[in-house]
Structure formats: C-alpha cells, structure tokens
Image (tube, rainbow, N blue to C red; front, side, top):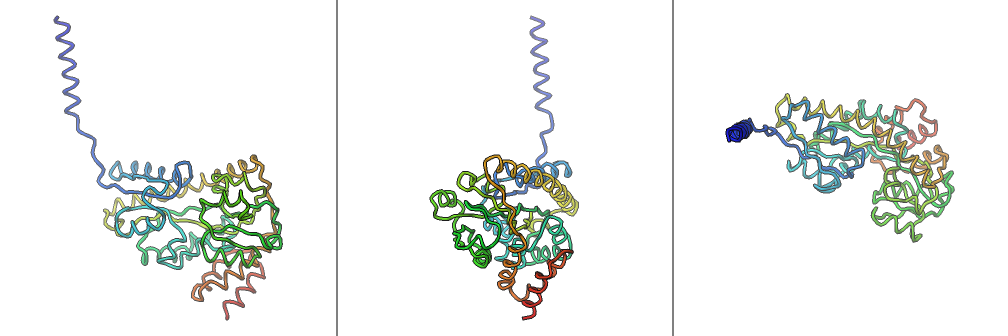
Length: 343
C-alpha cells in the first residue's frame, strides 16, 4: 500500500511539473509564402529551406508558412495579395509586366544565352534597375532569384533549323511575344491552356509544344512526342518577393534576417536546380525521347529580329545592353540591333 502511494505521489509530481512548464513561445510574426509549384518541385523545396533558415536565424521570432500548388491563388492573384498586405511572399516573373513593363525582360526569347550570362544580367546594374522598378512601382522587394530551366521544343519530327518548322502547328502560352516570335520562325503558333496540351498532342490537333524539362516530364509529353529539340529559346529567371510595405513594417534586425535567409535560399536553389535539370534530362531520355541539337544561331537570328520589332522604343537600349554583356555576341546581332534601335 505504501508503495502504491509513493508511485501515485511521484506521478502527481511529474504531472504538476509538466503543467508548470513555460509554454512554447508563439512567433512574433507569421509570413504566408504562396507559390504555384507542387511539393516535389525545387521551388517548393527552396521555399521550405527558406522557412527553416529564417526560423533558425531569428530564434523562432518569425514563422514562414508555405502554401504550394496555388493554394493561396495563381500568380497574378498572389501579386495583388502581396500589394494588399493579405499575404507576404510569393514567386513571380514576367507576369509583373502588367504593373512594370521592364519585367518582361525576365523571359524574352534568345536574349539570355546561358547561366553565366543570366547571372551577369541579374546580379549587375541591369538587375538592380529591374528590382528598383519592381520595388518602387509594384511594391515588391526581391529576396532571391531563381534561374528557370530553358524552354525547349518537342515534336514528332526532328527540328534542326527554322526551315523544319514550316507550317508546324505549335501550342504556345497566350503570350503575344511568344506568338510573334514563333510566327517569324515559320511555325503556326496556337495559344492554348496548359491543361489541354496533352490531349491536343494525342489527337493531333497540335503537332508540337514548348516548355522546360520539368513540365515536359511532369505532363508526360514523352508519351505523345518523340523528339526533344534543344532550342533553348527562353532562358529566364523568377524572383522570390516580399511585399515592401510588410517588409518596411518589420523591425530592422528582422529585415536583415529575412534578407540573409533569402541569400541562403538562392544558393540552395542554384545547387538543387542544376541537379534537377540533369535528372530530368536522364528521365526523358530513358522514356524514349530523342534529343536533337538544332542550329541555335539560325533560331537566334530570326527570333531576335522579331523581338526587337515588338519591344517598345524606350527599352531597346536596355535590350542592347543585355546583348553586349555577352563577350561572344555575334556580329549579326549587333547589326540587327543597330539598324532597329536607330530607326
């Protein structure tokens, strides 16, 4: 009996001690981070890395809640949400041109040649001009930028040069610049929502489509397309942004922590992005797609003239500055630029 009493007394002390423990402190701030990618995508993994980094750096003072797969809305919805202060962080790119036309440069065909050229643009004076416009005009402050996988053309006949596009019915997103460029290259571009593309390819309504490796793989286009033509016609980037009003309202020390976590996220994404691109190429090859190395310079020359014909006059000098960052810019590109810019 005495033993039972002792055990009950000990149990009571344990329960009392537990009830007297200080409850876990709630974060001072909660930031909602919504984006379009699914939970397997490198964007989402990078967002989760950012959340963990910021929790660690701030000692739990800031909690980042990540919402993938458009749970908080599509890209335009999220931009509006950040501007209104309803959400705090998202991932966005050329859709911002609805507010700041300069952000169209995040995805212009054959403007950025490769990853090194992209870094020179984004991390230099031109990138700073773009981000100043984003912050001042739209009210979105960049925390990091992510390189996006180049867009490539898939088809059921090989495409080695623009001549092979003659009459090809090609699905494109509803982006006027993309439509004009593919028309200039000789194809018949047909705007179509992404959800309809697989069935259209399967039924032969369209003959080809263009997207990065990630979407070609996740959509299963390897089941209805034989060739993956490495046109690399758009190499661009996207920004992770926070609403400027929300950022300014935070204490200065937490602002610095958010920027530090953003830098860490950018480095993480760069490492993971390269691994993902290599993995996806292997997966697409293993599933039977034949990779074609087309005449990129022929595509670049024809597309470049079409792009410059569309770009507003006030942005032609900016286009030229980006081209000139390439140490190996072709003479044709410079001749075309000079003739059009001086019109």
